[in-house]
Length: 80
Image 1 (tube, helix red, strand yellow):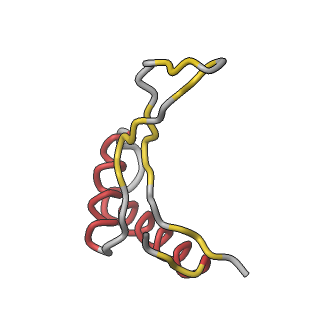
Image 2: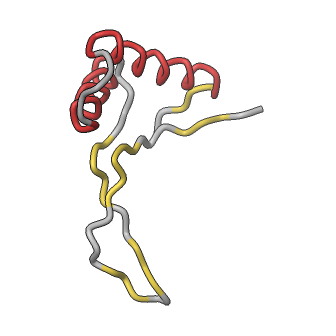
């Protein structure tokens, strides 16, 4: 697992989002921004996954409801 100080990670993520917005501008579909943000994360070597499946359980029973996180990163934030 990659570890970054919280402020460095925050800066890196914000810079990725700003870069995508500079190139694309407003008004496109969410999926376009998602693809581009993932590409920006790849270019900056930030680990991530798109459309990450999330298990949902209800009263002890696992539900197959196809729930997905749009964006997930295994990066661990360290705070003081």
